Image (cartoon, rainbow, N blue to C red):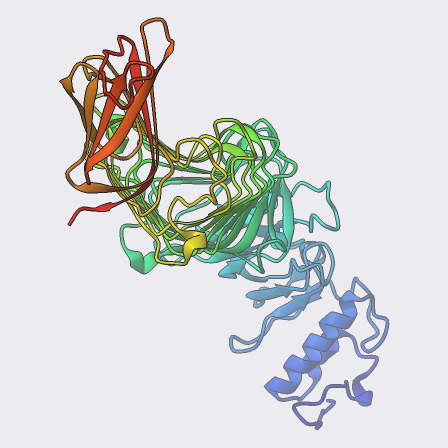
Length: 577
C-alpha cells in the first residue's frame, strides 16, 4: 500500500505515484482533499492523452472514478469529450471547460439526470447516462453558438434560443435564470424571449444579436411576464444590430409585457427595412426604456393599440435618457404613437439629425375608451426632417369624434431652424398643452432663429388647446366679406366680427393678449385683385382691419372686399392677466 504524506495544498503530483494508472488511485491511503487533488490532476492529464503525470491509455481512463458527495465535480475539457467518455455510477456532477474544445466559453456544470431531460441542455455519455446543465446563468456558447465577429457566417439562432428556453425552464415561476451575451451572435430566425428570463450583455455596441432576416422581430417578447414588480424582467447592455436585416424585419416586439425594464440597449442600423425597429403593442404597462440608443434606423419606434379590445388596456411606456439619432431619410415618421395611451418621454431624451419627414406622429384610432395622455418633458430637439419639404416635428392627427387628447409638451429645448412644415401640426386634437422652457433664448420653446417663414403651429379642428408659449412664428386666418372664417392656422383662438361693410374686428381669445411684432393683412376682390387695407390694434385683444378704396387710406372710404381677407400675425403671446 502506497502512502502519500504531502500537504493538502500540494499543486504538483508526488514523484512516488507517477506512472500509476487511475485504477491504482483506489489503493492510495490519502486524505479526501489529497484524493480530490490527485483525481482532478489524473482526469485532466488523461484527457490530454497521457502526455505527463499518470501514464495511462484512453482505454484505461474510459471509466472515471466517482467522488464523495462533498467533493467538487469531475472535469472534462469539452462537452464533446465528455459525451465520448464513460463515468462510474457515483459521479453525479461534471464540469466541462468548453463546448467543442476547452476555452471556447461553452463550459458548464452538468448533473446526472435519472432519465433523458425534456430540454436541449443535455447530452448522453458513452455509458448511456444522461447529463443536464445545472447552471442558472447561461450563454449561447454552451449550446454551440459562435462569436459573430470571429465567425460571421455561423448561425447561432438555435444556440441563443436554447439558452433562453432552458433559462425559462426552472420549476419555480419567477425564479428563472438569465442569459448572457458575451459578444455578438448572428441569428436568422426570430428569438422568443421566455417569461421571467433576463438578457444581459457586456455593453451596447459590444454584444447582442445581429439578425439576418427579412421579416418579423429579431427578439419577440410576446407574453404576460408578471403583474408584480418583484419579478422585473431585465434586458440590459446589449445591441440588436440590423445592418443585415431587410424587408419587414425589425429589432424587438413587446406585447403583453408588464414590469419590463430595458437599460442601455442599442437598436441600430435597421435602415434597409420598412417598419419601426421597436414595436410595442397593446396590453402593456410599466415598460421602461432607460439610457437606450436608436441609431440609423429607417423608422425608430412605434407604440400601437389598434383594436378596441387592446385600447381598453392602456399601453404605458416611459422613455428616459434615451437618444434617437441619425434616422434614415424617408417620407415616414421616426416615432409613431398609434391609438396608444400613456407614453412619456422624460428628461434628457435627445432627438437629433433624424431625416424622416415627421419626428413624432400621434394618431388616433377609430374609437377609444381611455385618454391618450402622451407627454414630452424637456426633450432636446435639433436638426430633424432632413430638409424635406413639409417636414414637421410633431403631428397630432385625430379623427372626427375621436380626437387625440390630453397631450403635453413641457420645456422643449429646440435648437436651430424649425423644419419647413413647422413644429406642430394638430388636427382633431383636444387638450393639447405646451409650456415654455426657462433656459436661455437659444432654447426658447419654438424659437427657430428667425429662419423659418412657415407656420410653427398649424392647428385645425382643435379643441381646448393651451399653448403657453412666449414665442411663435405665424398665426393666419382667412375670412370673407361677411366675416366668416374659412381657414384658421395657428395658436391664437379668434373670431371675426364685421362691424360695417369693409370693416372687421379680429378679436383674439380672452385668455391671451397680443404683443404685436409683425402683422400682415391682404384683401382681394372677387376677381382676386389686391385691395388696399389698413390695420391697427383697437386694444390688446382686437385687431381692426379696414378695406378702403385705392388712394383713400386717409379718408377711410370703406368698400366691401367681395373676395377674401388674409391676416398673418407674427409676435408673442402670453396668458392675460
